[in-house]
Image (cartoon, rainbow, N blue to C red; front, side, top):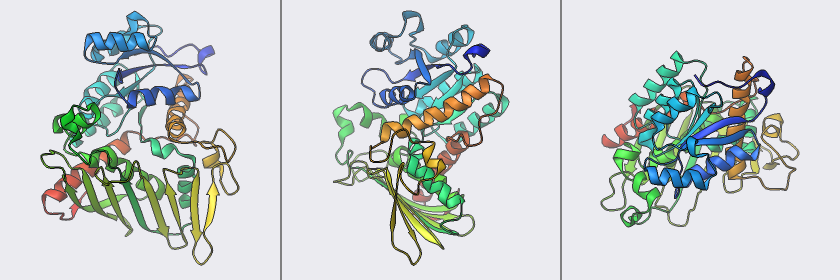
Length: 390
């Protein structure tokens, strides 16, 4: 197990490494920026590519010491676990098919894991990781469903928990994009190529890439548990092996209903994530393109605007807020909130304590539920959108 520092360093920066995220990768840079925003982490090691030359070049470009640049994640896990100054956490930012083996290696090495979503290639792998974490209870595992880090999403969740919306009846989530409207993957574009390849992405295309974000956000805010769904997955682009459009109806335990639409062929939409939740007393609406605002309508009253850092925003949102209202915080700050919440948990672990009760971030349960959602969508669609249990 990696040595996690002395008592005097219990509140110091967390040494972390990264697997994936080398030259030409998008999400790796996002993770590194998010980790730096609140100054909780030091990036000290990486297996940034399976190609030794690219791994070396990427590590040098990012200022890593030569002996902390690896081209093999397994070798990195073993070497870092043996070092007195070894990494305490690792970020996994590879294509989906590598999430499971990389996470397994670092969990077994006693190193905390921050993994990009979805959790794995399939539900079987997800459950194996869940079982492995139960055998290694000191390892902290986080899944970067970053949209749940936005202050106004935390505000929305707190309002639901406080009963301000009453009993939840309806949840509507949508996430339209248009970047895969053409067969971009055939051009060799890296992000399109692996996301449309079943061997690297898994059984779900759009449903795994952004459908899981929508689903996680819907359940995170509403507090509901999905019971069954009926889903129609479509590959509109000729020859595409995975879905590029998702339409799903949801039935939650307790009787609430919901729907999710996610698409990567919706021309005119860049990143249109939106969530609406309606209860017996009121409704809320949030749009990711304008994340500092949350609309709340109590039944029979005028619609009102709650702003990040402004009047009406409570302590749950305040914990995620850095600057005064009117100064925009966005995608990177929301992502950073997940990293900071994980940092609080790791620093508490260093001191042999449990994290504060208000520390919250997506974890292994979210990951398993996300994979169950993907596989249920695939199963339902194969049966002509028949209802299936989740």
